[in-house]
Length: 213
Image 1 (cartoon, one colour):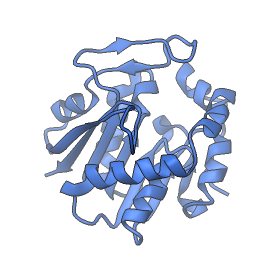
Image 2: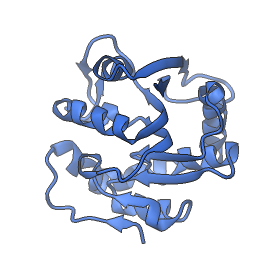
Image 3: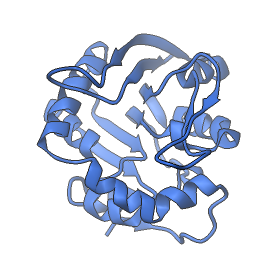
Image 4: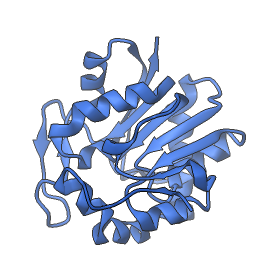
């Protein structure tokens, strides 16, 4: 079983939202061989400027579709993950060692070590903006060498409706804010993955590969 925590003390509405039924329903919409193929193509491009990471951790991994793609690229990589939803965490523990799945909020995660690669993809957009700097600090504290941020981009902060819900989706320059707050991170590469790509679509994600110096 993954390392679990009590689910009754969340600080934000957004955490409760993803820990609950909506987060469980998300699982069925985000799995399958086509998504795995798209993720493999995505990470092959994103990580072309990285050098053979030995370990990684994903913040908000859901059932592990990103980590499954990373393990195809780097078969020996030692993968860990944080996932708030208990149903997703159980499935995630079938892809990576169960004792390396942290079933908890990102806001409660306290890294015991650093990892060659820290990844967050499609998660910062769903966090309460009031806690972002705290999450930025935690991402950087966990990063041993590389940090990948892959999110919806907007030059200024904006909130948009998400599947009929308000205050559940936010766009901004997450990577820029992280680098301004943590000058030890330097931009290595960046790019865009389009939802209309005929072969390997992603959800209009802008990605950034940063290295800690």
